Image 1: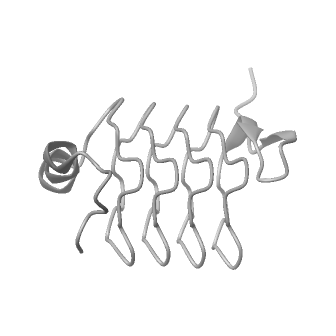
Image 2: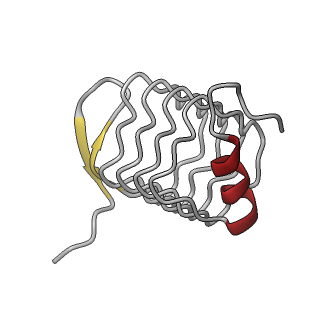
Length: 119
């Protein structure tokens, strides 16, 4: 899977090897059909990233910037998107059972709270 030109190649490799890349700049990266189950991408910049068909099941994407990202057909089952910004992202046909959306900005720009932990 070749990363897009604008992505930081060192950070892409860090993610693929260590499965954790907190605060990384992965904007524009190509993760089409990638196996990213359980990765930690807290506060990552994934603007305009291609995550089409990616498996992000149980991934931590808290506070991630996913504006204009392509998540078509992505597996988001049990993924934590709390605080993430999905404005103008394409999430059509994504699998999102049990996805956590607490204070998350939807593609339409509205704030949503779904599957948030109770206190």
